[in-house]
Image (cartoon, rainbow, N blue to C red; front, side):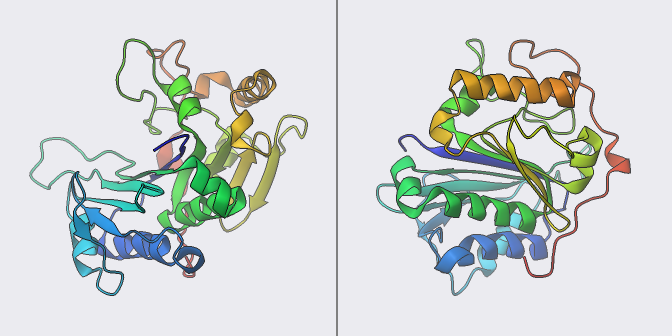
Length: 261
């Protein structure tokens, strides 16, 4: 997938069958089905046709401990993603991660331009809301790699919201509880565009287009924003091993999932 836009969503909501239904329904029904999958599976390669008329098996598979839902749309691929249920089985010797509901995905760059960036943003916002997520972001693949990988690693680093915020990207989403802990509102207008909603939290966008998210002036504004919010709260690939100041998550309300999501 070329020049992709990538998103990640972190949710504390258990991935019950009801939550699995809500998340997959949101994907299927967004904007008349423009991101509705045509293939799905629980591992690659995806070979099973996706039937939006009968999604009982995907709901069940995703709600199982260590279950997942992989999907894609188009040939060549236009939309691709994964919802991960990282809940451990009851017999496990270890506790499940706090953010066991983890959604990752990609939009092919030319396809995103063709359907419109605002529609892509809205899609991610609806997924964020349906998941009852605390944090999420949308940015280019290049930007994500630059901020969360280094020469010594082959996988993304800093993607554990329980320990600290992974970073700031082109388009960022915060639950009301996390935004309050960070002190996001009021946010310096000269750094980024912000929106607030009692229902879905707060968003911060650095520039009108993700194509500029690696420009020096944008990176400088993001660095200034991180310093303003508290650099000790954000992962930094330049010091990947440093301990971060993370929230006491027990004191931050789990976001509501609106009945209309």
